[in-house]
Image 1 (cartoon, one colour):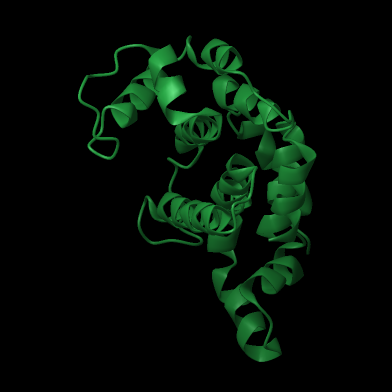
Image 2 (image 1 turned 180 degrees about the vertical axis):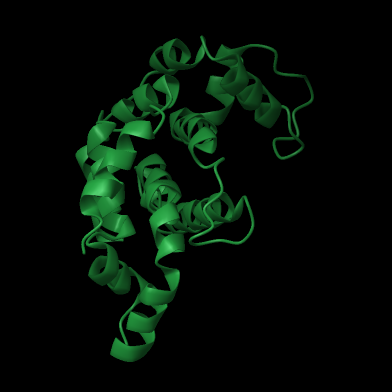
Length: 207
């Protein structure tokens, strides 16, 4: 029996996507983003502001004088880097819950998602792609559907694995067979609920 109705009902218990990160996502649709626009997005979130200043003053940049203001940090890092930091900082809260259906360690999904985001980012740099923030975000959020689906996968794990072994299909395909929905489709539903840009919605439904 399909568990789709139960899965969709569970979306109601999902916390809202952090407002600062959501506003940053909307800026991904713009061909050009000004420093002032980013300042307006970030300035009311102390945690993200502190994270930006910490990164700006890290050994990676090797600055001789300390960065004290958000505006200075934005000038140093640039809009693409700042968008990545803002979105990743906001997304951290969503990945805090354990996902035992997929990972045994509590931070497993977050570690996997960050690794994917960094690989996409590296590829974007190698190919000199202009919109690296969108690629980074797509890599970071590509498995977000697992946050909701994990509980159902855990309950039906043995049935899903039987389908994988007996039919020779992928784990994702077996999710669809047993649950009636897979984690990529669930990620698409979440992206629509949070009003993600169209390019990111496509990444959710096709991974």
